[in-house]
Length: 345
Image (cartoon, rainbow, N blue to C red):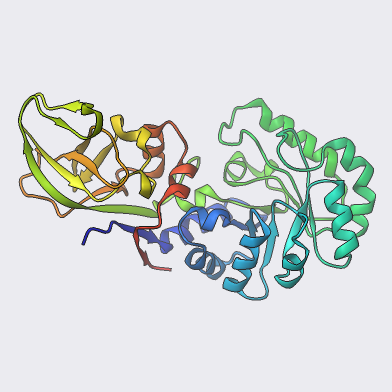
């Protein structure tokens, strides 16, 4: 079998969500956008619902409609992009809760779906989505008169606990929302870890549920084993892969494995990345290509059937550090060619 196996531990996923929920007295939602961070919304969302999540967050209305088909009636599904032009039918039919981002969206929603639930997203300083303070001040009474399901904002630097932006945004959010009669939400995973002052009424953890930083105590959720296609002896002075970028200084056993950047194994991590054979580290040699990677297996006594790229020894954040990126990108880049093995749940 030349198909790599991506194993997704739903018990670990549920344990991570529960641990984050237990850190707060607030209601705990769950972010399942981008197909549950690449791990499969159809299996992840029901597991989180079984653990107790009743409020879910997605990026766009199309994701929300897909999630409604998975979860059925009952759970709230909030859409970060709000009420975009062309979304009205999806929002109505899938009973989604758009997070209104500006005056145009508010007008669109009230004209098309006046009695349909909505939330409001405020910009507390990130300058990405949401109403800025002046716009909110002008629209606040109109929006609040309709009884929004949630009023939220998003922290820009929550993964850096000492960053002054956290306190600045907390103060701005309080100034815009203190005294309102609607649930409030400011914190994703990083905000949950910042403490009670940031929790308000609803938290919405994402990356920590899937085993990533900044939730250092998270249990690993994803592991990836890649089959070995061939093993060869490479003599000193010979090269491996495109561009002759790696040359053997001494005789080396090289395994070619069935994975590459088409599977989300980012090309940039090649010079620093390793795979695991049990407790033995095996260095990637040369460039990561589209479907194949060369790996030094000289230290192994027997030819391995598979090598592990992602697991307990090497987390999504380990891989991210090699590629100069973040764990989010590693997870959401995982390709479609993997055989997916869901355990627990």
